[in-house]
Length: 304
Image (cartoon, rainbow, N blue to C red; front, side):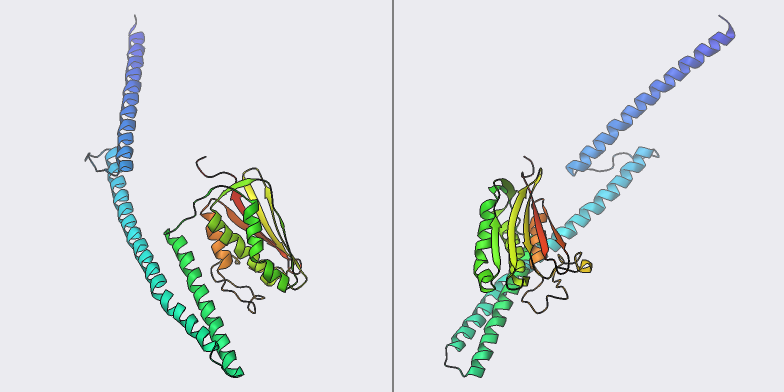
């Protein structure tokens, strides 16, 4: 065997040995990284190597990141607890004064007032009712945002949800000579009946409120592959294109809605309620052609 052949053979062995060493080192590094991640997931991560290797530097960075994340979580938990306490205090402390205000306004209206005094008493009662509604709506929205309460979706028939919502506003629709109709579907979706009814009622209330006398409001649903779409369509004035992106914002009221009763919370609450059930809300509208608000409910609850 020539010297050249021996040299080539030695180089081959050296290359193979280097490859095995690289493979073993890579496997060792991967196992160490896996242990690091396991400890991080379990919440017990701590640096256990202090050298000049890349893995030691990675451990140090991960430890700093996790310490920062833990501190941020503790701060967020404290803030959420403070919000929950504040909401509970507001709900408790305002309930009795508002109830008393409404009671005294009612008693005052029964006291043989002059026409002028009766008008003032009626205005006082109306404002007390509006204040009570505002506080309830704000507390509901805040409880949703803070996670104090949350919708619990489960499989339910959709038809009764639509019929119940329309029934609640049938009287208001008759008073305005609005044709309110329901086209219930055959099928089920995953939703929390109580909270979803509130979201749907907010849409039907708006449709009846903003549709002029003699108009039409239709509540219908369609079963899609992954969602059930509930449509609330009306023949109202419609929404300008520039306002469509803001109608679901908290307290937003369009330029043409200021004369109607409302606080700008109904659509916001509907969006929040649907989002917490894996669904969403959309709107399609053109000025002078009415609007269609659509609730998308998952056909099946998550995890099924």
